[in-house]
Image (cartoon, rainbow, N blue to C red; front, top):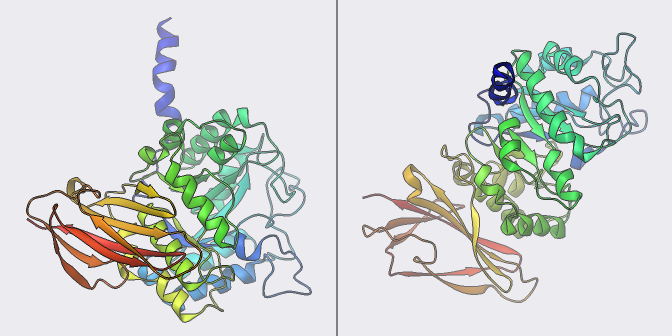
Length: 405
C-alpha cells in the first residue's frame, strides 16, 4: 500500500512539463498553411518541402528584420520524412529533399541565431501518410534531441482519441528525459474537440507548452472569423489554462498570403495579440507586401502579445456583429489592451460608444490611452468616461489603457 501511494503521488511530477520554455508566446515561422505538402521539387523547387525552403526562410527571418523583433523558430511541418523508417527504426529525412539531413539543417539555423522546429504525429502515420510516432515515442524524442531540434509539433492523425490522454504526456516525459529544451506543441485538444468532447485543459497545460484546440486555419476571412468565434465562446474555460509556459494556439498567422484584405489582416494580428497566441507566420517571406510585413513587425502589437504576465484576452461583450475583447496587462492586470471588432461585411465604419466601466477599467486615477497600432496618445480616460471609436467593416479598433497612478 505504501508503495502504491508513493507511485501515485510521484506520477504528476514524473509526467509534468518541466522545460522552462514559452514564458511568453513563441514567435516564428511554420511552413504548413503556405506550402502544405508540396514534395514536387523537380517542377517546383522553390516551394517544395525541402531543406532549401527552410534555409531560405531562416535567412529571410534575419535579413528582413523578423528575428530582431522576436521571431526565432523555423518550423518544419508534415511531409519532411522518408516514407519508411531506417533499418534501426529511426525516422530519417527524405534523402532527395533533405540531402544534408535534419541535424545539418538545425546547425545552419542555429548558426543564424534561430531555432528549428519539427513535426511528428502521435498516430501510426502522420496526416500526410508518413511514419508516425506511435510505439516509437522515446526513440523519436531522442532522435529529435540528437538532431538539435528546438520545438516539436505533435499531431494526432491515425490514432484513437482516447489514447491521447496517455500518449501526449508520455511524449512530454520523453522530451524532458533528453535534457534538451524542446518546446512542446500539442494538437491533442483539437482532436478531443473534434470528437465532440470538452478537453481537460488543466491536464493539457501540465503536459504541453502550446496546444491547438480548433480546426486548421485556412487562407480565408471565414476561417479567421470562425477561430475568433471559438475563442470568444471559450468552451471549457480554456483561457484560464493560459499563462507563462502554456498558451492556447489558434493556429498560424496568414498575414501576407492571399485570402485577407488589409483590414482583415489587421484583425488577425490584433486578435492574436489580444489572445496571447503563439505568432507562427505561414507565408512566403520573400514575397510579402510592405503593409503585411509592417503588421507582423509592429512594435505595439508585439508588446501586447508578449506581455510577460501572459493573460489571455477574452470577449467581454457581443452585440450583433460588434464584439469587445479585453486583455489585462501589467502588474495585477490593472492596465489592458482592448479591441472592438466589426464583423459586418459592408457599409460604412460603425460608430461604437465604449464606456470604460464596460471594460472593467475603474481605477479612480484614470488611464492614459493610446491607439494600439500606432502608439499615438488618445487621451486620459476615467471610469465614468465613454470612448467613441469608428470601426471599419471586417475591421478592428485597438486601444491600450495604461494605469499610471
